Each structure stands twice: as structure tokens, then as C-alpha cells.
Image 1 (spheres, rainbow, N blue to C red):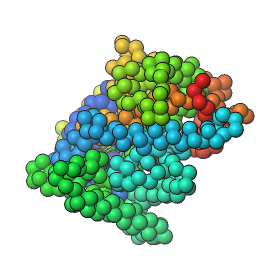
Image 2: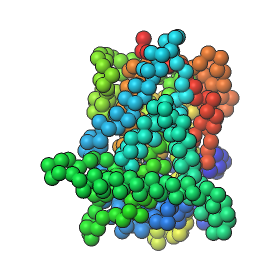
Image 3: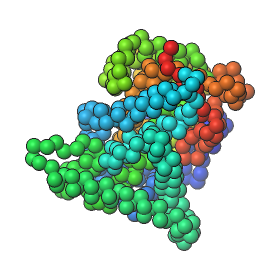
Image 4: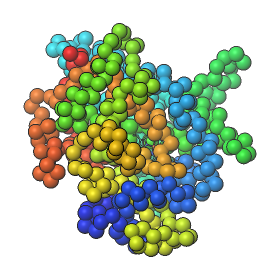
Length: 462
Ligand code: HEM
């Protein structure tokens, strides 16, 4: 889909017909216009994201229900609620990686270790999400549970996504293809139910003076329909929790992966980001001394710009967030689009277009630093979507990404393993004339296609 959008944009420009009664648009101004209007409903395509028999937030189309759901859950994804969750996020995120790498370095005879950073970031975001959404400490980065965690994470997320996609097929084919692994779905459902039951028991046993837990499981249990005051049923919690599981692991982990990969391809950016972190936070007294999100937001603008630039250059979600033209129709670039037309926002195309970005194939975080271009640049990155259906978890994703990256750059040095020659600062892509990026899958997520590209040498900060 992403390649098709990029090729179509090069051939036909900022708007082209991509299917009967469907167009693909790439001008950031047009994308903003469509995505910021609540009268452009999500297209029925989103039904494939129905992980259980019920609509979770992402595939809800009816504007009234959407408004209720966003009012119910929105406060729990706000920066003020996330502040309460930050100690847990730091413990299961940045501190968990630091602890693991410190132990590995202590046991290493060479003062350096070689690790797979994509896997580390995936386990780490899995660790955070499991704690926040299921209230479970799965210690994903602990060597004793590493293999089980990897297997469970890969199988469950792949299976849930695949099961959703297979729904596009006729019912009997869906049943035929999914029944051999249907037990997995039952296992996940059981896990969710156990988490809900354990939490309900805990709440029941709390003394009035004791504090209720603060996490996303509690948010799902506490949230109330603003009109009827009704709470979510266990089935609704199940549907929403699977969305948080799928949305919360891969996009965050892969954005971190691309950021570190891009640092290795652009050593000057890596050096600048590292210098910024180590100049602003020079003293690192103990293992528990970590850079918090507020500290990073206040003092690390270049690191933030680096993450924005990764989100622009490699937008991890590869879907084109389709919307339907409302009954009054719309003119885009002089073309009248009648009601019912599907509009795909060509995010990968728009974010790599030389019409809208100077030197688009170059990783250049400075475009998010210059006060003259910063605002427009930020509003032209659609990796989290945009407007009234923008990603609800984006503040959480930023918190995860900034705290993990800032703390790792502060404590560790990174370099490409000796002998690795598939990518590097001097391995230039013939087409773009800039360092070649590692290959990626382009189906659902821009995931590194080959895990062998994700090894990196880590040592203590010099
Ligand atoms: C870098 C990380 C992330 C990226 C790039 C990302 C991207 C997206 C995108 C593109 C959408 C769809 C927007 C649309 O359909 O118009 C979305 C929706 C959503 N995301 Fe994320 N996401 C990320 C992290 C998260 C996290 C950590 C969570 C929560 C744990 C989350 C929860 C959600 C929810 C609940 C929605 C549905 C919002 C709605 O339909 O109104 N996301 N995200």
C-alpha cells in the first residue's frame, strides 16, 4: 500500500484515483482538511481492526459513539494522567533496559555487548503495555522469561492482526484458516479475563484509606459513559485492551528502532543528540537516576527533533487512514469528489514528497528545530494520524520513546558491529543518494525485514 501510494504520487501528483470511487491525496494541507473534519467518517475498511466481535475505539465509525468513547478514555491518555503512570513506565521501560545491559556488560570480558535493538525495544514496550493494560509484571527483559515473552508477544500480536485481516475473506474461509490457531485467541481471552478478575478482587479487598491502582486497566474499569454513567462490560474491556496491546507495542518499538538505526547511518546526528543529553544531564549518580519526561521535554529539543524526523522519514503504520466524503461533497485541487468517495491519506507519500519537504530522503532533524519551519513541519507529520481521530496513545508513545532514548544515550555508546556491511553511513542508496536504510516490511507496519540488520555494539558511555 505504501509503495503503491508513493509510486502513484510520483506519477500522477497530489491527488489520483486509486480504486473505483476512491482517491489518494498527498498534499499536507488537503490531508489536514480531511482528517480534522469530524464529518469525514472513517471508512468501513476499519472493520478489519475489529479484533473481537465488538468495535474497539479505532474501528468505531458512528460519530456519537466516537465522541462518547473519546470522552471516556481521553482523560486517561492525557499528560496529567500519564504523569501518574510515569514511575511505572520508567521502571518497565528505560530502567529495565539499563538494568539488563548493565548486568550483561558486567559479565562481559570485552566491556562491550552485541544486542538486537529491535527485539530489545519490542520486549520493552511489551513489558510496559503488559503492566499498564493487564496489570501484570511479565519481566519481559529478564533472561529467565525472555524466550517465553518473545514467543508470546510475537504469536499473540501477529495472530490478533492476522485474525482481523482474515475477516475480509468469506466466513467459511476465515473459519478454515483460523481454526488451527483458534485456541490462541481463547488463551488471550482467558489472560484478559484473569487480569480483570484479579484487579476486581484487589479493588474489593482495598481498605478505604488505600489508593486504587493507577494504570490503563484501571482506566478501562473506571471509565464511564458521560451520559448513561455505564461502565464498560468485560467484553468491551477485552476489545479495547487488545487495541491497546496491538497499538502500544509495535509502532513505539519500531519508531525507536528506526531512530537508533538512523543514528548509526547519520553519525553527526547521533553525536549531536548524545552531546545534548550528556551536556544537559552530566551526572548520573545511581541506577535509579533517570531522565524523566519533563526533564527531557525541557532540555532535549534536538532529541525530540530526531524522533520527529524518524516518524516523518519512516512512518511505521503503513495504512492510509481512509475517510468517506460527507453528503455535501468536497473540492480538492479543483476536483469535485462526490459524497461516498473514499479518501486515502497518502502518509508515506506525503512525508517523502520533494514538493512538500526539502531534500525529503535525507534524515535531517534540524527541520524540526528551525523556528521558521518547525510548526509547519510538525503539522505535516501524520504518523499518529491527525485531527479528531488522532492516535489516543500518542502522549504515552512520546513518553516511552523520549525517556528510553534519552536514558540510553546518556549511559551507553553505540556502534555498528565490525564486519556488518549491509547498511552504514557510507553505503549509499542509488535512488535517494543518501545512506541506504535497512529493508523493511510494508504490509501493516514498517518493520525491519531482517532481524540480522538490528545488531548493535553497546558499551558504557565514554
Ligand atoms: C509511535 C507509536 C504510535 C503510532 C505511530 C500510532 C499511530 C496511530 C495511528 C496512525 C492511528 C489511527 C489514526 C486514524 O485512524 O486516523 C492510531 C490510533 C490509535 N492509537 Fe496509536 N500509535 C502509536 C502508539 C499508540 C499507543 C502507545 C497506544 C496506547 C497504548 C495507542 C492507542 C491508539 C488508539 C486507542 C487509537 C484509536 C483512536 C481513534 O480511533 O479515535 N497508540 N494510532
